[in-house]
Image (tube, rainbow, N blue to C red; front, side, top):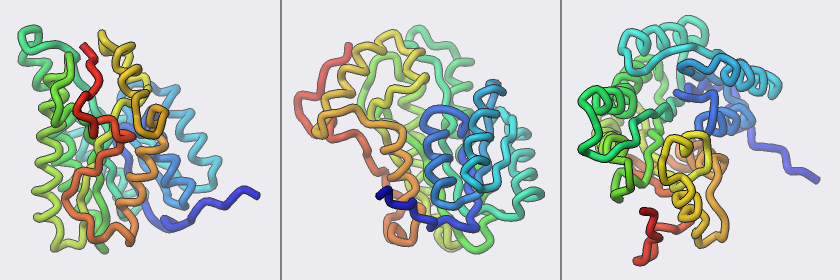
Length: 260
């Protein structure tokens, strides 16, 4: 007999940035299956956004999809205006949307740096401030980071430094938003085989490294989604400003696999 999913997010509204594909979609579906109404934004892929929208609606919850480029503050403000006007509140924000240019330091240009930082660090700051205005009865914010924030990975300079900034932002927001009853944490994922890996010249090596977990398998988007949802529950109330690593134990070993 299949166990019914928890409905611990009934009547809650959850916004997942970049929620139409990959890890973001898995997070959106996790919350939807637990009863939440979902809002997600996307950048260009209308087909993927529509597929995600229909899949969420089939679960039996409300869903709002908004095309919004989070590198542009005006688009972020418009996104939250729509959340306010169509949902009336917000309980959970998942800052998942990310982008970047996979090049080494001497191959990066200022525009690549600005693009990455604006989406991966500035946008979560603005989104969190705007979300706090709609979290009238408190809420939760989870920022999706990666192990490149702490470890040096090939071709990851711009993204890794932006994720380090995101983790620092997590700590500051955890303190500043606490008085509003808003809990802020981050989830740092190991290698997850999604479309995002296709932009890395060393994708094959990254996938092989990701398989060397203590669990004997590569982590999945669903693994990250479950931990993300947990951090937004009452049970996680005393976890504040932390970065929870979900990597299957890969980074525990001193002989962390070479991926050059």
